[in-house]
Image (tube, rainbow, N blue to C red; front, side, top):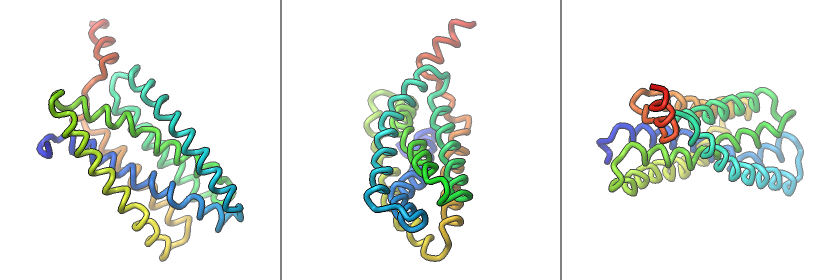
Length: 196
């Protein structure tokens, strides 16, 4: 399975995207309390709302992906949007704390679509193994993200740390632009066939 290049690329892109998303989830409450003077309960409530919205966002992303030619396009758009939101947060924090919530929503909404994209690049009998590879990569990123971002914040300020946090999202979007991932969705393939 590790010899399957699309699975490697999609798993790597998912892991990079997780670095941004999990770091935001882990540290947004701290950012709001330290830099914006929020009460801990209010910061936790904002994080809870962002996560609830991102749960709905997964459904919306899946719905949109079913109607686009390439499922990967949705994930790439979310990666770019998340990276932009994090950069804006780096510039404007703590003035616009809602940017943190937006970045979390963008980062967490593509998870299901990413798993679906992996399953499209392998035979049906290997879908479970391919998803296992992807989950291993993302769980490794989940473990590394809080340690890495926390260590970074020990030596730089929030603005620099957040700007650096946009890099994994951008790298994820770049990986998702590779031509090796050009498998159309069923809807996209039907549309292409109907137009020829």
